[in-house]
Length: 349
Image 1 (cartoon, rainbow, N blue to C red):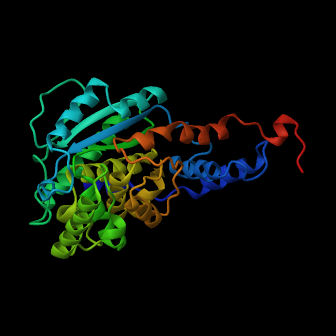
Image 2: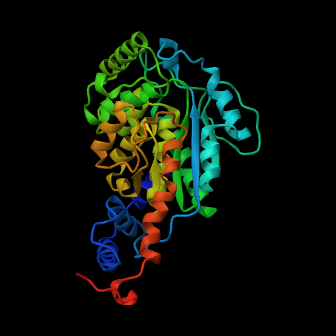
Image 3: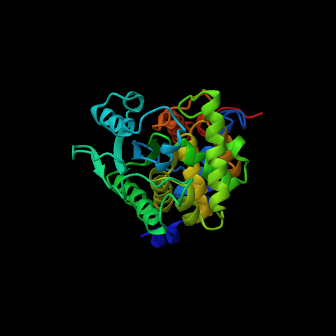
């Protein structure tokens, strides 16, 4: 499945992008007056291979949940049980991402790809647990190569199922206590960023815990010395199950030629892995927002993506990306609905 997905990912369509750029220049507005939205609409035309591209609605957020062996190193004060408890909260509709999804009219899918505590089968939960949490990345590789591929393929299957049911824009979401630690390690490994600059405070740890967290990330990288040219091995050494599954979701979206909005530091760390596996997958990625986690900015720079929003968020769950959903749709709507100078009888300068 992974090989077939990678083979299906192609570059953006240059002819469609040229047509969108020409159309933007003919619309009743000063050239460039919509800023980033103009280039976004052009890129989405290239992704769809037509101008104007389909308006990317409806949207759905896929929240992948997993636990982490590195939790044993004291990188967060939150107990590991919170992961399973928050999954239940998502399914009950009581989390921030539920509120934001309702506001934007998006649906939500919750995927257990690696929660340590067993979850009861309930409606709305996709049961795809590869293993009950990762191993401690400071002691051994977090995952085997086979486990990484299995988790990536969970994400690919979820993307395919969502697109097949008519979802035209995917949003990345995550849940996993301690998952910002492997995210920082992934970002440092793929971008060469120093662990001190790739690691943030996650859930809001104090200074002592933050310094310890940086040392944990550094120790893991020193132990494994992951090679960014081998993204499966990097995910196995220092990644997480939700990170691998999110990489799969991004790859699945790129193969299906639908946009995928990236959330915060966990999502962009997964996007680095997806881009390392298939560089053309970047064409499907939209940076929903800039997380205050420093590693997120390092990852976005490496991917060459500019975030649509900068609101000081660091919650995860897909919340920042969800807020960007109407902006992405509006960027495409302009190409459909705005009159040209000729059709409106408006004089040009």
